[in-house]
Image (cartoon, rainbow, N blue to C red; front, side, top):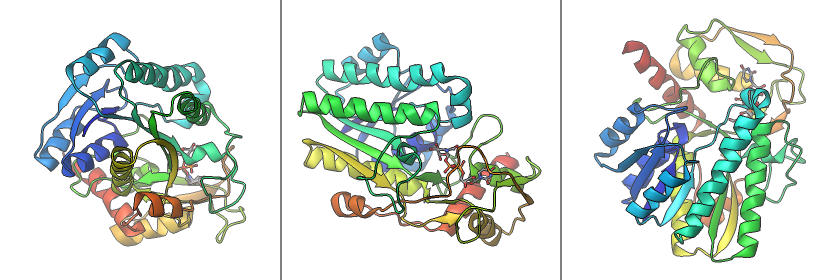
Length: 336
Ligand code: UD1
């Protein structure tokens, strides 16, 4: 298969590129480096020993996108080219709707023109809003998303459903990610959020490296085993492998619109993560308990049975792997 990865130099895109190449696929990457760097492309080549075509461009640039389809016989597309910072999306909603929603529309319309109808979409557990129950199954109610970022994900899911309803020759897979953490074990690629990170693990590793002084734990009065928020953290390499399985399903079976949760099915609290990080890396994390963060929920974790049964996929890495591999990359950066 020849697979186009929009945003393929980013955190999840680059890890998926590695796994796709390892399975013998060909890839084409487009990225405008708005939230990534060319270092990731070199790392993909170094890790896999394989080469691929790359276009530096904005995926909303229709003319350039058409050229990519003219020059390459693309069999399937995985769309990673989304903005993902929740706080930023509240401040700059238009940027988020334009990049995430308009971008997806340009991409899907161009795919249609070139009769390329296999599409994998990076969605998020955020579409469940305040979970009606945990563990969350794919049938759980969606909606009630608390910010523009989350709403873009849900809107695109609806758009995909409408496209499929109108034309069932599309093969679509929506992957709802839980909380991706960790990096490739080589330490060559990793997550590099712009500015001060919002997410827990990027914050923890920066406290460990001395870049940030102290972690604020947002609330310890939730109805959870230790009062801190519970999430389903998933190693990014497991997540990347989930995309390979999704592509394989669309290639072999196709004909459908599928939705899968990609999570481990295990909920860990903020304190569980801090303790596991300290244990597996030997680094002390300075923290304090503060107020709850507005919009946060107590618990969110996946029922991952459907992905196991239908994609033959399960998350294989544990919390220790997630902590160690998150740290290795940051440690390497420090030494550079
Ligand atoms: C957040 C987003 C979600 C997005 C996901 C991507 C919000 C409200 N939700 O989810 O839309 O899909 O990231 O991975 O922002 N925490 C701290 N201190 C920190 C950072 C986080 O205590 O400095 C806690 C949070 O309160 C939460 C847990 O750690 O209980 C995980 O937080 P985070 O990594 O931001 O992920 P989510 O809130 O699950």
